Image (cartoon, rainbow, N blue to C red; front, side, top):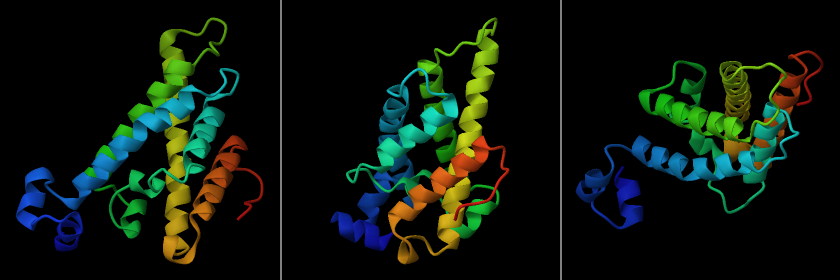
Length: 177
């Protein structure tokens, strides 16, 4: 915390007036990324299925070098990502889930004949949660491979693409790692 306060040019006491913890900083970073992710998903063609729109919206964001590292979407140490999320991590996941599902519902014009609003919402929430599981699995694996210390950031995007490909195949077929 002292390093963060020093880098910001403020005292630790001043720092804690604005943030209760360093996790709160990550939450603010996530809050800044989410509207751009929502917009990227909403701007996808209506003909794209929900999972494809999620992945392509993510790719749009990941391809922009101006974006903060997408790993900010999850909190805690990499070892903790495969266990129950910390409270901050759970809040981040909830924020991300709400943003993605809202974007998918906003762009959902692929109403199936006779599908109710409730059924469409259920379908979009399923796509959101499945997509987030793929994203989180890719992130965990990226850090198991050494993270940014051992891998270029592009490797994370490759793993996300592979996770979505496997999801679309019903997790059948060979893994292309």
